[in-house]
Image 1 (tube, rainbow, N blue to C red):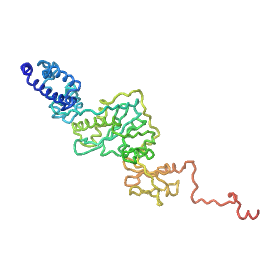
Image 2 (spheres, helix red, strand yellow):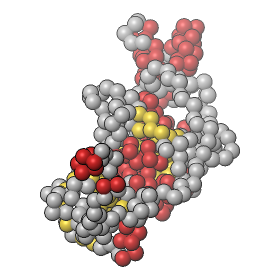
Image 3 (cartoon, one colour):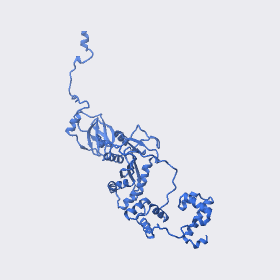
Image 4 (tube, one colour):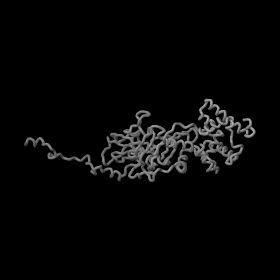
Length: 434
């Protein structure tokens, strides 16, 4: 080793001594060989080569064999310092892949991803990833777009402050295309319905929907147990009306495609919002709709396995009434309906002298207004405070006067005299004559 001091620089000698120390710890059994490889920052295959060189040549076999010649592909020191400075000063919260893209797009620095990652790790600016777990087989994608959509929400500090919001995302299983992405204060029935309605209006009806077992998707009698298919939620009822099959997920690993997508969202969207100075929900959702969803799809979407689409046009569907929360109430004797501490007065319907005792279906819209339906007829539209907004017009009144059979009922005051011939049994007088 001393003879090599005159040939190799001091830095190379220090490196060889550190390598020798780690390898000796692995040789004596204090650490595993794969742990030694992680400490040095090399692969297990390379570690096996170094172990063989150490056994055959001793410590001298660990010295750098480039004989003090710098690589012809070596990055200039000025450019390396510029990359480190950019990451420290401006892009400190970006992941390596995101930062590598910014170098090429914003600063025209065409360095390889591997060099950038290793340089940031060597400088201590980026942590090395932990060793991967057990091998899992990835589920095959659906062959056509529209065959299965994933929907999920991710709670995160999207604005990099104390505020937490939920990002609602709907993506296609076949292509990973993002069809909908919006930030909301929290994931709820209405925020989920808003996303599904937007996708159906833009793309059409899809075949199936894959989701977790959240309370707005499924009713689960026992926590962590199986879902009850016979008791659909408001979202489940809407999907059933549209003919969309819902599939529950029983583990995060089963939703691997959407979970990996959220990992990418969390590693990129907060940084993009910070770089653009966006700090409100309205501005963030506008940025998502106008710019970032298309950019996200351009980078991460993949072609479908087959040509064509499984989306179907949504005709003759009143999505305004489908995507509502429905409640059943009975009309009181004074022709009022009570709902959540509200009392809504029903107007006179000419097709029935009173609506008391009728079963009313209350549709609560996303804007919290209410629509009352009785026997398929729209009775009135009310504000969130229970005030009538749009009374029935004469045309609507005439339309609902017709019953399902096309007959108009007799007026209630009409009296029909009794005729003995109307009865199937003889009266008292006729019986005595017999």
